[in-house]
Length: 431
Image (cartoon, rainbow, N blue to C red; front, side):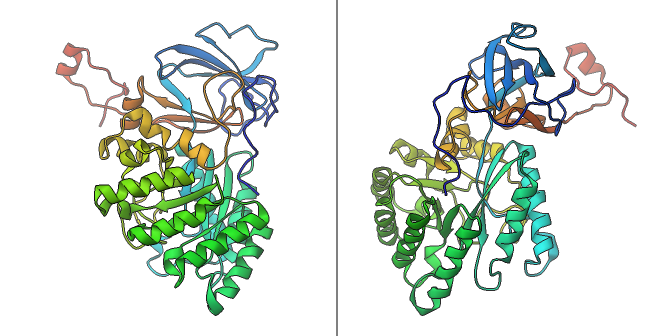
């Protein structure tokens, strides 16, 4: 089944989600049917507003102070967002839960079920703290892992219910020939167990086109989206894969496609036109690669977007052997696309929010009445500043605060600072 239901029309009376927060501070994990009021938040258009949440959706947006006593009922909790920029929450469209946080082990990744579940849960909470209320995790199935790693990640998914939405992509190694028969059987079993997306790496199969055809067949049987790994370094082969996948319509993604960035511009342009015509999403990984592909590099996002290709940015490896310093931070992915690849901050954030949500089949989020209450508040006044210094964050999922990160910077006393009236967060003396 797909990651989510089709997008409903934005309406304040839309389907309810989970209940709002309780308590005067809107603390993470609190639950109460009362509404939640976000006070004094700044929007990207410069307005300062109050936002009332109820039933997992945005009930009302008004000028600052206008919703404090209004509405159909009293708010059960208020969160002061003075000094914060309020954004649609990002999502994590490409993570690897089964290998996450394994770099310090120093040897082969442990696939002990308890260890995988612990690491997958911790990884999901780290990503949630960064703002990703929905996460898509690729999990290897078959070979040595069998279905054990998938079972462990699905357990983590159940444990996280109410905090974050974790969906899984089943990744078999081989799907063609005699050796691929077992992989195909395991892939079908994985979907029956609860994997909601089918994927893998066609570049590792002797018959990449046959691999994609097999994945599409399973996806068609079960109504699942498709998310495949490829470097896309060989244009002719990649063109064949896109042509095969394009017949499925929306719901197909390829990533990280870093090889496209090393090809001549005219070749990439032809490929981009083909991707756009096939309605295939490119999942780029600006923070680093992942273990499913050998090469590194980021797809040419500006060229792809200009051609009409949907581009979503994911994290890839989170502190595993592929990237021991991976952060799994959507805002860092957006920052890198802006600073290194020339995207406007608004377009860079789109790759981890609106475009990433669309790629995962999720409903659109806007800070407007009727839309899902999936929000991220980041300290700052403008999006560019938030991407640059996104330290303090408040994460809202289904209308309640589920995570907070607070950073305080302190300086020792400075006569020059006092004379110039420079701002200081810390007030105490540093020893």
